[in-house]
Image 1 (cartoon, rainbow, N blue to C red):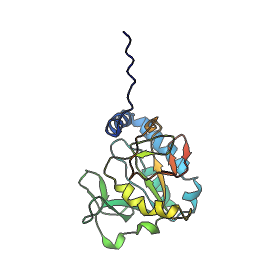
Image 2: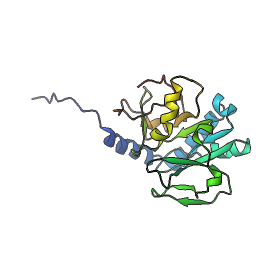
Image 3: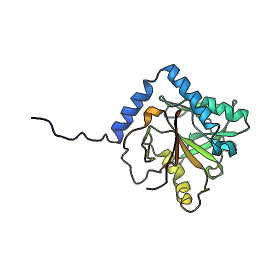
Image 4: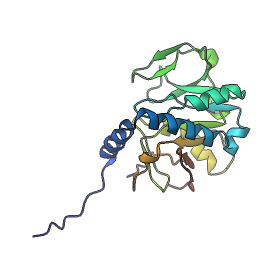
Amino acid sequence: MQNLIKKQTPNRKQLRQIVREKRTFLSKSQQTNAAIQLSNRLITHPKVISAQHIAIYLANDGELNTQPFIKWCWANNKQVYLPVIHPFSKGHLLFLHYTPNTPMGLNCFGILEPKLNVNLIKLVQDIDIIFTPLVAFDLLGARLGMGGGFYDRTLQKWYTNYQYNKKALPFPIGLAHDCQQVDTIPTECWDIPIPNIITPRKSYTFPLSK
């Protein structure tokens, strides 16, 4: 008898595993080409051109390499900031100014971040763009992160303000490999939607609704 059981949509944990595996299977040359394509796309983005203060992250676990774009920012007098895990407020991020000479160290996840220096902290609301990492995204603009909720907490105030002021800062842009697009992401009430997600091949713009 034919099996008529409908295939179930993967849950969030399963999606993370599936897409992270796809990402890690990309070859070194594919990663290099993707990083260059992404940087070329970003440097022509209208919000990047007008921005002075840009928060971004260093690639980890097969993520897109952001270094080509960071070097472009430095060469074009854009101020760059990296996320640092807040030492006292669990699940929150600080953003510190990042230059070629910034002292770095590994955080609890084994990811490089600037060593904490209160003089280098930039308030989130004073940043023009926050480029957010993600594990997967769908064509409705849902973003699936690693599960820690760091960026959802970071962007909560921005999302509330954006409902009344479309120029609210910082403007979030998600970055992903093309292979990180999936059909559907099961969302939770705390998920913050992302208005723009950029891959090496395409830029996606989404209406903000929850």
